[in-house]
Amino acid sequence: MGKILYILFKIILITILPFIILIRGSVYIHEHYDPGGMFSLIGGVIITSIVLVLYFTVFYGIIAKKVGDLGSFKRRWVIAMLILGGYTIHGLFFISTSNVKSSNLKEELSDLHPLLRISVSTIIMLDKDLIITDASRMPEDYRKMGLPSKSSSLHFKQKDGYAYAMDLRTNTRHEFRNALLKGYFWAMGFNTLRHGGTGDHLHISLKCHYRPRSI
Image 1 (cartoon, rainbow, N blue to C red):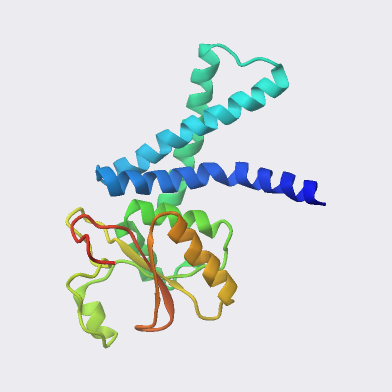
Image 2: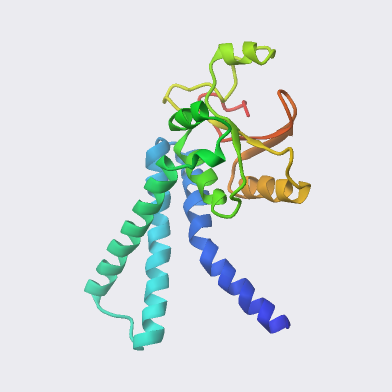
C-alpha cells in the first residue's frame, strides 16, 4: 500500500510541477525584476518550457533508448512552447461565466493582472465551483457597498492598467476547501487575507511595486 501511495504521489507531482513552475516562476520574476505583467508571464513560460523539454526527453529516452539529436531538442521545445502558449492564452482570456459572480464582473477580468488571471484559471481546473466575487473596482463601488473608499486598494487599476487584487467566495463552501484554496495562492506567492467587508470572502493580491505596502 505504501509503495502504491508513493508511486501515486510521484505521478501527481510530475503532473502538477509544470503548473507550479509556470505560476510561481512568473510571480518570482514579477516580484524581483518587475518587467511588466505579460513579460513576467512570458518568463515563467520560458522556464516551464525547459522543464517540459526535459520531460519529453526522459519519456523519449525510455521509449527509444536514446536522447536524440539537436533537431529533436528544437522540435520538443517548439511543442512545449505551443502547449504553454495555448494554455496561457486560454487561462488569460477564457474564464467561464459559471466562475464569476455576475456578467459585469466577467468584463472586469480583463483589467486583472495577468498573473492573477492565470493563477485563478489554473485552480479552477480542480475547483470547478470556485466563484470570483470581485476584481477591478472604482472608488464609487465602495460607496455603493457602504464602505469607506480606500485610495490604496489594489482592486483599483494601477499605473500599468491592471488591478492587483481579487476576491473569491468562501461562504457555502467547506472550510477545508477554503483552507486548501488559501494555501494554494499562498504557495504560489500571492498575499491572502480572509475577511468580511461586504461578506465572508478570500482576498487575493499580488505584490504591487507602485504600492509595496498595500495588500
